[in-house]
Length: 253
Image 1 (cartoon, rainbow, N blue to C red):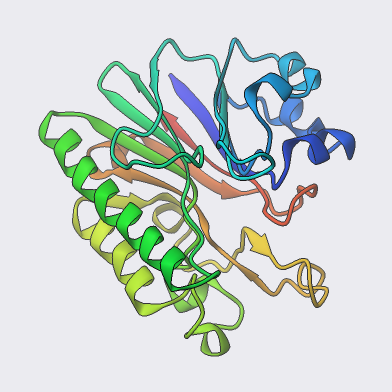
Image 2: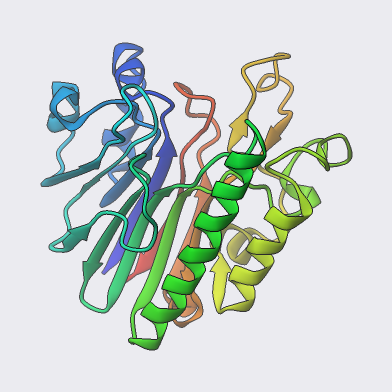
């Protein structure tokens, strides 16, 4: 059965609802919708979210009000876990296990604030990869989606030269994606679309979206043993409502 999986950093779920930015969901009809940076606790999820036609809603909200948080809306029969690989209280991870699949919805840390946050981001990256290796040895097939907060290659952002010393495009961050791929994972967008230029995030400043001066920092990665199951990978860059746009895949599971 081909499933449509979509990931979107909404940059505030209540604002998305207020701005009526969710209409596209009933048109796209994803089987799994991963949301990041929901910025709301589970008890304050807008009622409209429960009316989108999904059987299940899982939430991992951060302790700090109005910050971070992830939510997954889906029709899967699965076991769901929060962060099993990294001690944090920021609501960054949901792991959904079904059959032989482990599906992750992750809001990866941003390292731009200061060196401490960059170190936090890199530690998160490193512990996640160790955990992925462990799951693969157990025979799990893996799907990772979310806001990774790093553009991998120069084609993944409009202005690579001027951003080469900025977190989100630092050599150590880009090298981690290289390492992820070398450990047996596939960047689905590149696997389907080659070197096509497309972005998933634009700054609210400098009229960046109108100029398409963006970054591709939202991804679906899959383990190589699912590569033949992948039928499509796409970026819905016409969807407004956040500084990010949704990204997705279609995969036969």
